[in-house]
Length: 165
Ligand SMILES: C[S@@+](CC[C@H](N)C(=O)[O-])C[C@H]1O[C@@H](n2cnc3c(N)ncnc32)[C@H](O)[C@@H]1O
Image (cartoon, rainbow, N blue to C red; front, side, top):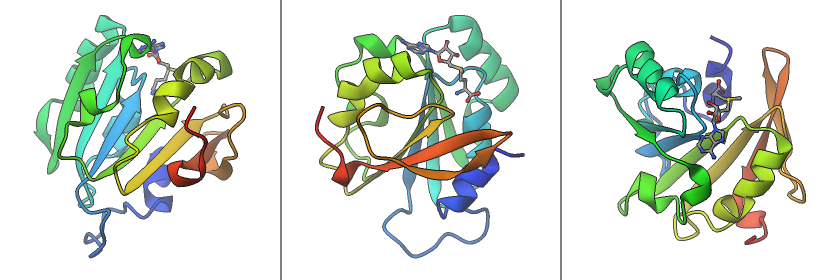
């Protein structure tokens, strides 16, 4: 599956988990739809949890049906029906104990701009945070191209070098 390449490229392969501090990474897809990116995160030893958030309840039900819920392939799968515009802090989703986070999102430029304060303030106290956007870039942020997913370019942002807002 092509989305898998995102996780492989970032070092979250399906092989044995590396002895690194990104073990136990929480993957969070913002606007998860039916959960294709969450599904691609399954069965990777360095990713312990994958969480999908979407404001469309029908999509969340479809994600539960297609991907599952609870432990799937050794990964804890969770779904949240919620409006990201109403979220003040991504800790709401990942919890206080998260020490490594991989955030993915496939939204158009306007959607990303609306999310920018949430992403910019995101999880600043966590040592490892990587943000991936698919097809669209975050305006004003310097990302780099990560690769290609079904003809769509995806971009990598390391939060340490990003502005707060
Ligand atoms: C282009 S789809 C991406 C689906 C999936 N992440 C993927 O890569 O295949 C964008 C998703 O974002 C969701 N979305 C848009 N605005 C949202 C918001 N404010 N809060 C939560 N989800 C939102 C839509 O319902 C839609 O499912």
